[in-house]
Amino acid sequence: MNIRFALARWRLLAVVGSLAFSALANDYPSKPIRLIVPAAPGGGADFLARIVGVKLGEAMGQSVVIDNRAGASGTIAADSTAKSAGDGHTVLMGQSTSIVIAPQLYQKLSYDTLRDLRPVTLVAEVPNVMVVHPSVPANSVRELIALAKAKPDFLNYGSSGNGAPSHLAGEMFKTATGTRLVHVPYKGAGPAVNALIAGEIQVMFAPIVAVLPQVKAGRLRALGLTSAARSAAVPDLPTLAESGLTGYEISSWFGLFVPASTPAAVVDKLHRETVRVLKLPDVIERFAKEGAEPVGSAPADFNNYVRQEFVKYAKVIKDNGIKAD
Image (tube, rainbow, N blue to C red):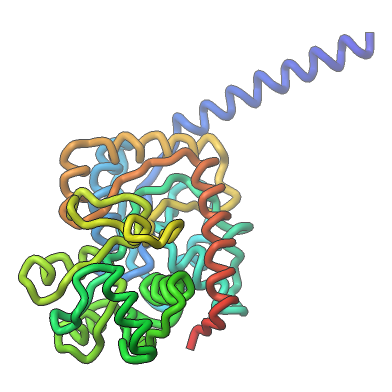
């Protein structure tokens, strides 16, 4: 009798839990969603957030308000999200810098990426492009490698700052090719690109959106993509892996995160609606103009991806002794 009673009670609790789970998903969102962006207006993360935010608001019947919180490599925005209520009304447009790189450069952060933030979906990947000043006598990745080996420490490569994807891409290139290039950090991609155009530096692993117009204008020469696959924005440009650097792959990526306490029902609904948005033709077209590839992965897959990226960058940072300053 006790066993039967226990089973009946378990079934009742399961039904009640299922109904509560469904009700929670149906009621969400019950107010405007705050989408926190770890960058100033006009940047890549902000651009993607505004495209997705408008469409997501239309799909979910609540406005999505963009909250720009730039600074400290995106850790200010990530920290704010991690400490917010886990009700799905605070969402972070996280990026590789703030999620998997900065936490390994700054030792005293008040949040833990893997513990305090819950991945929802990978929104987009944006490859970097290896570009050189037109004066550099190299028209391919192989020719640049040969030049760098013939003249160690002769070529300077710029980045948007210590620990940025553009910096790590350069260090990975040096390790993969056995070459010696001198790193010159700048305060942002814009100043670094301007320095490259002016000839102050010779090489850069730059975000595609930051250099594509300059490449088309002939002010810079593109040699290869750092992504695993070619980009629709420059279909004729090979990847570095295709150019002989087997296994070389590094891209800037952007994805949605919520506080770790957010219920699975809310995460699932937010994921489902975001994926629908990413499949809209006008969204795909606008992403493509910026060189961004929409993804829309499942929460579990995105969680695994984040953890793999965490391990990958930890090795690059440790092997090259990269510091935040």
